[in-house]
Image (cartoon, rainbow, N blue to C red):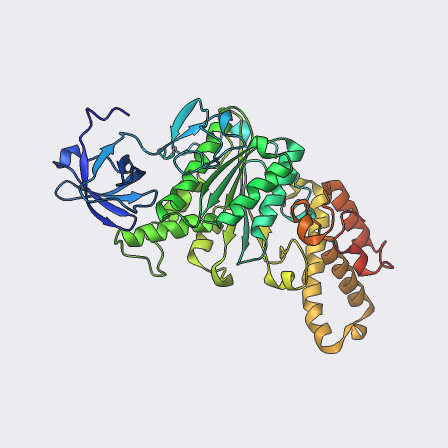
Length: 464
């Protein structure tokens, strides 16, 4: 790095991840979001991102990595650019951190170019009239409940919402396994603020199943400062955009997008900004939109980015402001239910509180839509009958109500499924079920063809 012609700064204060850098004059101060580098006493490189300009040539920065051992009066070198990450085919099968350094101990990453993780907001363009009626392309996941009620469409944003220990990560991993193996697509996995153990398990699981070759992993985990946990989402979407530019479809998995906004709240507090009414950062909506607006289908290259985002729900409170903010950007919302987990129904998606904009006759076809609506009606009626049955027992129901009750229980069991990535926990071999097989099975249950079979035979099976 050529720093001879750069105006150097020096560290005047370090408060956790917030570092104040002094420049000789205000004219020499680097721009907002520019990246600067400095070193600790033990020669460890530290990246700083400019967050604020203060009077008197002071620049307030957020450190992307730990400031441990960073001394006062250390020299700071502006790079003249925002944080840049390497892109290219050399990243497949590798794990890197927020600023593109390898963390898998497999040597240097071979890359063609580096791209800035921040980019100016794209101007709004109205879709041309000939594109409005374009065909929707559905991605089959092989997971019955998702393909049936929450179909994944190329270029859409999909959220898996749930509190602690409801299976968000394992459901995300199963989707990666099924889509990447079947469609042979490219995949970018962003580990934002989740446990290091989960990142390690994911890497070994992908390696074991031979799907690491088309997956790039980028981590800013729970043990890292808020700067890393926040910027990792931007690094991940930049990586996805670089693959999209090559006219390729890319899947972007984020585990967990809530941690990205949570890190933003931590940074906002450290910078002394006045929080909003609920304690979150005042910039909550703009930060969420900066990330989500970059996930789209490109009309120029033809490539698409399809995102599947795990969303942690703090204390199972779905009205949390950060969760509600993420809602507004998603096309499909799959809410995991603790009640379903207690009943042993995996995946624990609750269809009655979830929704999907892609479940439409124009997208999935008339037959698929009608079957899904009939299932939703049955499950809604079952929920009403379940409360009555708890009081008076199933034998007191009318014949028609009892039929609906029993068929709905079979449907509920049929929508469970053994996962490939959970074979070690369940002891059952994973099953991939096509959309056609799912629809045929549901039709048989709804029409009464399988009324004589006990409901236990439908639990944790693939097809009927």
